[in-house]
Length: 255
Image (cartoon, rainbow, N blue to C red; front, side, top):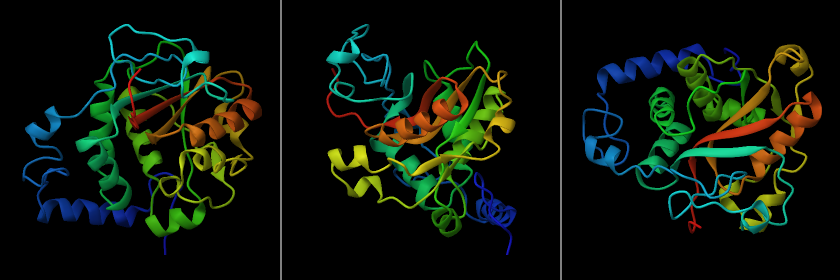
């Protein structure tokens, strides 16, 4: 059996995915209509996050141009957040949720390229001016083996190609944690603590002093606890700033 890499999985599943796409034409992941990953109607119902009110966590604003200080943001207040900023392309609802679920749980690896294209068309998810390196949230080995790939890694790889930015595998998951979607809000904040570590050769991979900063990639931002823990490990271990990009973001009540 081939060994799965930490990002995209094995070559055999990719071949199978290509064959499946030949014999089974694309259908909209949200409504099932044939022809594309998203039909025009579902694509038009994607909800871009748009302007944000909090420059730190990326919480959306209800009014264009509305801003709030971090100490007044309900998602930042009283928390140690280890990333410099977080941005997402879409609200985690409707078609965006269907895209994430299909990539994550149904083995449709090719969706990562489509999602990267959608994300890069949103404000704030364009090629940065400063030199950066992309990294991604890791999966525990047991999940990587059972799923065959890391969906965050696939999305990061697609963004890397589209933006022409380097991608490095810098983190590893030390132990299994309970799935975040099975926990309440307070438990979600604590669940990832101590579960992530820096790879031994991360400094060599990154090239100390040459990477500028790191853009940490994940599929969904919920409470921000997972990406904050990853950012803590990266910033403390490599001495560089970390920003976060995700395809989607949970939106409760816009400020």
